Every structure is written in C-alpha cells, then in structure tokens.
Image 1: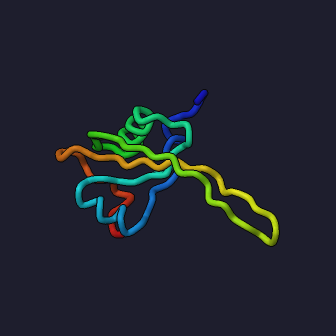
Image 2: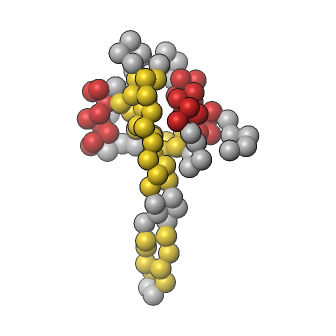
Length: 99
C-alpha cells in the first residue's frame, strides 16, 4: 500500500442492525481499504476520531457477489470490513450518535 494516508484507510461506516447492537460493547464496524492492515486501521481510527483508544481490530475479506444482467454474468468489487473494539476509558465515536 504505497502512499495511502490514514484518511484513505477508512471508507465508510457500516450501519446494520447487528453493527448497531455491537456499539453497546464499544465495537464499531467500518468498510476499509482492501489492502489495509490491522495496525493501519488502528492508527486511522485513533487519528480520525479524537479521544479514542483502540483495544483490538478484527478484519474480514468479503468476496464480490455474482450479478447477472440478461445473459451476462459479472461480479461486484471485493471489500474488506473491520470491527474496531475501543477500550473502556475511550471516548465514543460521534459519527454514530443519534442513530
């Protein structure tokens, strides 16, 4: 991952019922760059959201779905998802407040 800055690592938050339930345990879910490592995700979260301290990061690679349009088949893009666990004394991430 040459020349990828910390603001390029996190693409967007994942808003689902399961991810909203995990927020009670201070676990936040993000879509991240496909070549980002756990340490890069940790650094990006701590720099982007002030007052946060990351305890652990779990990542998963998601394959693209097979889609069909007429007789032509194709695949959507591969994605990577990261679940970030914050420490107990860490500040909450404000982007998820009010949801």
